[in-house]
Image (cartoon, rainbow, N blue to C red; front, top):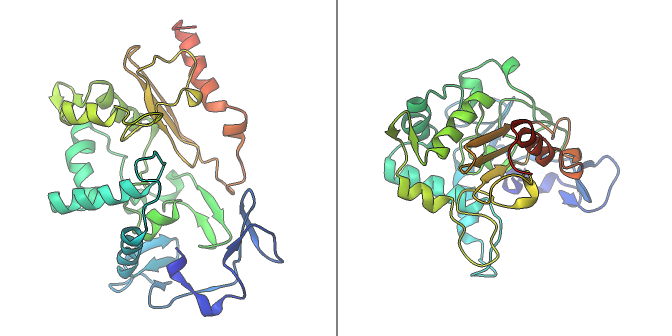
Length: 292
């Protein structure tokens, strides 16, 4: 999002590791300078043909922001080639590949090919186009960048710069419909007897690659984040806003936990420090009499 900022409006740096008068704490040892102006050619308070992308409740972006973000990714030098490193960039680029091959935007593609066939009617991007804000949990009271309560627009800034439709973040929905997707996963891409995702492709995305890598192409398989009783084949994902899903094929068990731990701000880390999600996951196994 640095590209959105009018650098001439800044007095000093945009972010830093120390507190300064009036700065907003963003995270542990991270502070933001809210005293800046946006570049008017990229950001507007009015949505129109020149600024179609919703950035927050009352901020909209030019399509040019997408190009800036993607060109920034393309020009970023790779380091540690051959080593495992967690990153959103691969999934942002994967979106571009899907859209190039399919000729459709990612939100249209997944709704047509996955969500509609399995009846996951609340799942999708840009929920304010379909639902009232009162149905959507707020994710952050952003006093630094967007200066508003983030509700119905994606919390992740990179995905927000892409207009809320991105390969790395931006998906909204109910726990029930997330469970429908996990049911699709536990059946290796099949739902109600219909193969939605090719089984070979699905298995490729739940297989770890490379030495010491706890993640597969699409999912986490790290034991520390899940129940002790979960089988070795369990895979899933933990999200920045506190969400968590796990699929245990051996025990035919799926686990969905939706949260907005980042509200009102990102300093709330109790889900992690108290180990709440793996404890809840373990409680399900114990209630069902599975495992240890």
